[in-house]
Length: 230
Image (cartoon, rainbow, N blue to C red; front, side, top):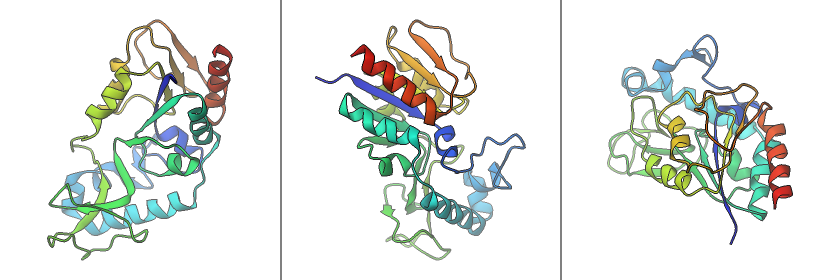
């Protein structure tokens, strides 16, 4: 039976494919305040702005390509049972070949009803327009978990983390909760590899290794270590 490898990935791995992150030093995301484009309040105030913002994000994601970090995580399925838990809303993990991806913060290429959360639709195009409605007659919105909204897949992600034989943290500052708290579900003694050019704050524990490299370099280094260990 293959060992189980769970990887928590964040904005850093997508940034290497050219996708902007909202953790800019000026607090802006593509020149917009987070409150304007990634909160229920922003949606209520100006849905047209929010829709156009995510229409542009879809176009950028469509033009981006998986990088070596994404590809190596997919290749690890040859040796491990791999579960990707990602904070990213793009589809780069899937396009790289990963077969099991849990999107904690939603998926960019899905739309959902602004009134009924269970009415979720694959995108027929890369745009959602004002006036496009769900089957119950409510405006469609991006299927994104905004700040202040519940994270419906968190419990599933916690279960995966708790049963990991190896746990990777890739390209995330571990500053966004509740996703950052998944590290606390990993069993004591389970190897944890933190792959990021900076050293995210993590409580000291056994079998913790920091790989201070970007994902495109660090994931390959860890993959080689794991293969050598058998």
